[in-house]
Image (cartoon, rainbow, N blue to C red; front, side, top):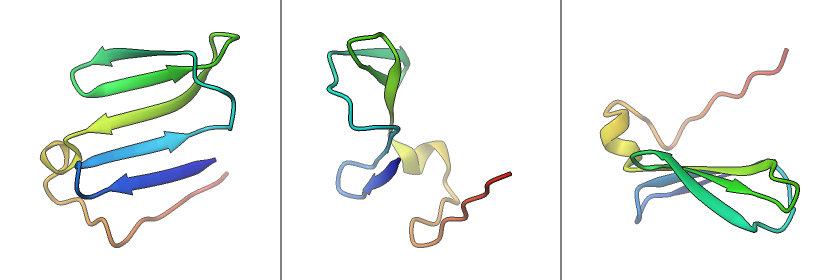
Length: 66
């Protein structure tokens, strides 16, 4: 799993695995899901991240597992 933050394009991308992406679907404005050949979600992209969360600190992230 990889998380990429693009400060130039103001986007956040979560890649769940390395499967080839065969289709993408914008499920809400600025929310794009990427699918593999088995129609499983393998990526999630959020556009305009700074306006979605104005207090977002791109220098500090917390990860939790349970």
